[in-house]
Length: 343
Image (cartoon, rainbow, N blue to C red):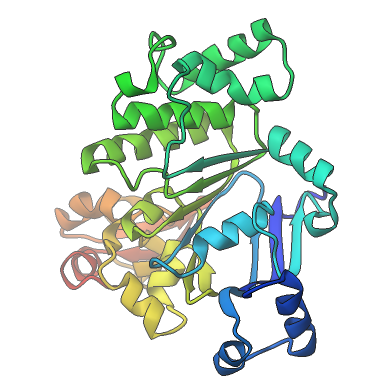
């Protein structure tokens, strides 16, 4: 794989549900490559994913978000071919997954992909250790090796000492940790997580987000993460794609979505976002004017991380990038973000 090649990507991806054979939808798209909503309805087809294109870079957390029914879960299942796309291209390490055989797909899912869903899907009659080791057992790995690997993953997610517990003896957060450990046991290159924390209580959810970020700092996985919660997205994501009615409306960093929404829907979606946690010094700085500065702020630092220090100073701060001063900011710029919600 070339250094600049996405780990996983799709181009012009469609998923249409048809009453009957999948070939009906495929034939329709072959005849009508850019159908309108009216044409789809007239053909009796239900669009779930419409002409989706995205590319996930190696090692990044790519969040797909949208309201219920927007198509985000269907899109992720198409990326792993758990659901067969109607049209378009899906590539994993440059390989066209739509051309992969069933056997090749099984091997890829078993050895190179990990999946965690909102439903923990633990096997209730198996201990934590056996649940985590289960995918390795399916692979035919010998018991000593698979249990040793499972114990490593259990310790990694903070459940050491719980190996012999049954799922019913664990809290919701602990059960989700078991699910995460199980998905990591195979050493996946790409990790799909579909609203894994949405069923948890707020405090446990926050704890699991922290745990997730700790794991990512250690493992550096390529992650596709689904959520409907923008606060969760900005905590976790390197980049975000927002979906509506099956389409990817816009993708980019949280800062790009807030500062330059593609349409009124994205603007409304991000309107109440905590801008101090999203916007950087670069986004709110003004040109240098020769004023004596009180200190420096790195251009990529979030407003929330320097707001108190800057607000307490009568003088502006210099904004630096790679050792060079590129602008300045002061109380006015910070307060505009904190009070008005925008730079």
